[in-house]
Image 1 (tube, helix red, strand yellow):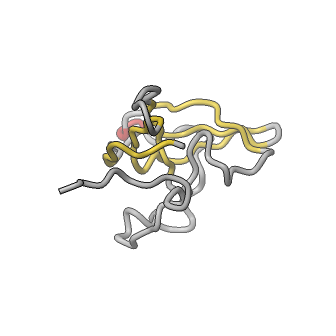
Image 2: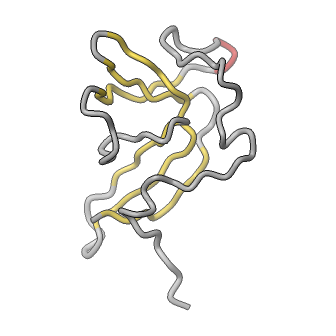
Length: 114
C-alpha cells in the first residue's frame, strides 16, 4: 500500500494526457502528490491528479483509458489542442467546491503522532 507524504496544488499550465480508443484528451492537473510505499518508505513517486479525479495507477480508471504523459504548456499559449472542452464550467477545485479525494479509501494520509 502507498501513503501520501505531501500534496501541493499544481501550477496552471500542467496537463495530464490520456489515450481514449484512437484519440487523446488532456485535462488540467489539479494537484501533485508525493507517494511512498508504506513500511520501509522506499519507492517514492510523484503523481498528478487531474481535474476529473484521475491519476496514473488509480484503481478506478476505465480499462479503455491509458495515461500517456504529463505536459506543460504556458497559460499564455492557451490549452493543448486535445484539451477537454470547458463547457462544464470551472473544475470543482477551482470553483471552491471541496472534493473528497477518490484515494481516501485506499491510501491513508500520514498523521502526526503528537
